[in-house]
Image (tube, rainbow, N blue to C red):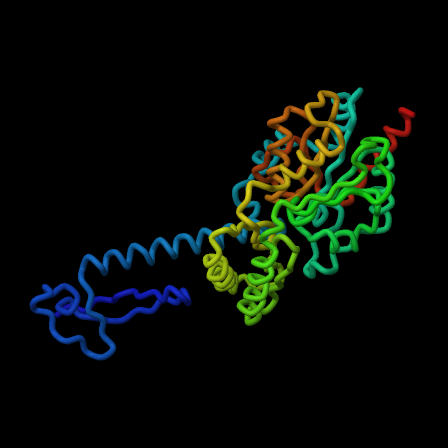
Amino acid sequence: MVSQNVVVSDAKTGIITVSTVSNSSVFTPSAQKPPTAPGYISISKKKLLKNLEINGAQSQRLNSWVDSMRASSPTHLKSLSSFSSEEEHNSWIKRHPSALDMFERIIEEARGKQIVMFLDYDGTLSPIVDDPDRAFMTSKMRRTVKKMAKSFPTSIVTGRCIDKVYSFVKLAELYYAGSHGMDIKGPTKGFSRYNKDKPSVLYQPAGDFLPMIDEVYKQLVEKTKSTPGAKVENNKFCLSVHFRCVDEKKWSELALKVRSVVKNYPTLKLSQGRKVFEIRPMIKWDKGKALEFLLESLGFENCNDVFPIYIGDDKTDEDAFKLLRERGQGFGILVSKFPKDTSASYSLQDPPQVMNFLQRLVDWKQMQQ
């Protein structure tokens, strides 16, 4: 008699166990099946193969998530795995040149048009830090953004809730699109010269999801509390599960925990950014839609002489980059030290370079006046 190992997966926990069974107990026709001994599993060959196939698919999906989690970190060495050679890196730079190096060309493209600025926050205006509650922008960056808002209509478009990002930025002259654009508010002062009829905006396309978001938030807090370093952030209309401070050996475990909660809410979708899981309502709304809404609110709908510039560093910013390409107006700038697949036209390496670029725009504007 030959023994076989049977792989058994607990759907609730994701734990895979292996039990040893004999060929006779696994493959014996149903009419001749002997009683199942304690600790043994009797299943048909067809069911066994199906279980192995399912477990393999689950394992493959999990491995895919973990690989994506690794790649999402710009500081992780494997971020460079697909761009290992200097030649490949230089090729990427040619396709997405520095916005600072190409500044004169950018100004030439924007000449005679109204520049409208859209800025992500984390990783763009502030450095990426281990504790998301301490992602402070510098005083110099704040002064630069304030001058930018005086020169051009300017918006912050972020995955953060508006209250949180406003506590960081502390500028009333801006538009704020929080929760990946699902919570949009206009400035409390300024901008009337751009749109006298609508000096402020309030738009919340996912308002009906608030009770569900709060419910899922509580479940995620409870589910992840046993994972050291995991942090759940309630961004009002969406949720973020940060794993920046989680040991990489615990990433697969955390991914299973998050998915085990979200799978019970079919109207929510789970995506991934820079060392963060994002849970959002499954509606046709993203940072690109928010950008479009803000342009319309500012009076630039179907306008040929507008030049939007969107600067961001994360996957969620790609929706805005793609929209600008489709419109054939303005462009996106990806903030990254490492090559990434992107729809942005230009690149900057870090927040200090972003500040330099913004200051040059302000200086250029002042020279025109």
